[in-house]
Image (cartoon, rainbow, N blue to C red; front, side):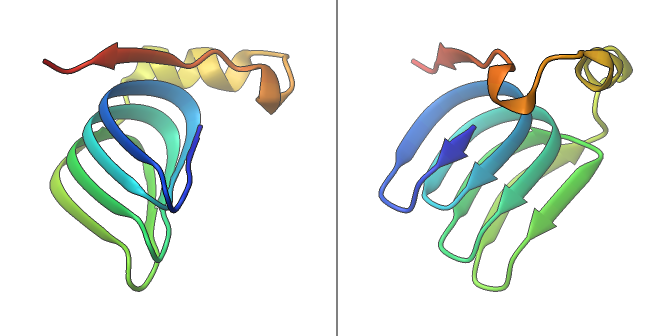
Length: 91
């Protein structure tokens, strides 16, 4: 899942890898999360691998990745581009 530099998202993301270069507010559960230099994230991140580039920002709470989510995503034999991503809008 990629949020581009012009992208804005508010909600919940569950994916193997999330790259934020735009604006995100909500909750992310992923094996890997990257906040790039133009990225701004607010909320909760559940991951064991978080990278924030110089210039990027994250305000919120970090939690370890749930072991079920991590094991499921690591054992799937599909190519990375085929992973399912689910969105839950925030009201």
